Amino acid sequence: MNDGREQAVRRAVRSIRENFGEPLTIDDLARAAMFSKFHFTRVFQQVTGVSPGRFLSAIRLQEAKRLLLSTTLSVTEISNRVGYTSVGTFSSRFKSSVGLCPSTYRQVGGVASRIPTEERRPGSHRVALRGEISSPQVPGQRTIFVGLFPDAIPQGRPVRCRVLHHPQPFVLEDVPQGSWHLLAQSVTGGREEYIDDLPPFVAAYGPITVRPGVSMAPVRLRLRPMRDLDPPVLLALLDARRTALQATAG
Image 1 (cartoon, rainbow, N blue to C red):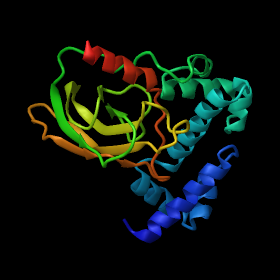
Image 2 (cartoon, rainbow, N blue to C red; image 1 turned 90 degrees about the horizontal axis):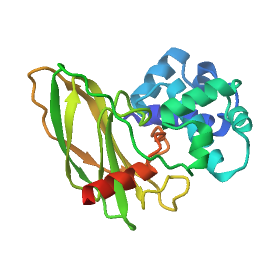
Image 3 (cartoon, one colour; image 1 turned 30 degrees about the horizontal axis):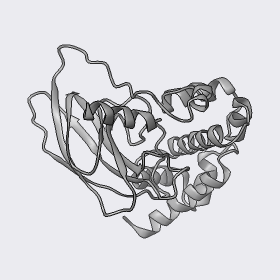
């Protein structure tokens, strides 16, 4: 990656993280990066894997998750604080990205009882995706969530997912045809990144294209500490990890 491009994107990401509550535009972010708007959008996508607008939205929702669990602010107040002018729009985007509506997310302490995946539709070509996850030695017991998503942000409903006890081979069964991103996250004790003393570890691979009659080569993922250029993980995973581990143990 060109260091000049990465530094430019870092300036834009810093502006997003410092000013997400403001009505930021692509022009604002391009100025922060010191690039033209057209050039900036293309470079930002190359460096982060998502558009500037998607990255901004993800940062806003990540902060909303934190505020819901760590403050007594109302949903309306949180919506305004993270840059939304409509609480209805905020609540809709939060639920579609995190998997729970804001009030429910707060009530259950950021815990999802399960992770719904795409419903199986008969008649379409499907394959098994095999892979292996490796990780540097890090302190603390870590569970690993691995899932297939339509794009590079772990949000909404994964196509398929697994929870692993430790870095190991895995299989995602019955993957439908299409183009998918394989994303993994590991945190100490299954805790969210803004609660944890240690940073989450992440890995990404894709896009992976599933076509009729084409076998899938095994995928290798190596976890690494999350960087400021990585889009945040929005999906509520905590209890889903525990539930999957209990089901595996049973």
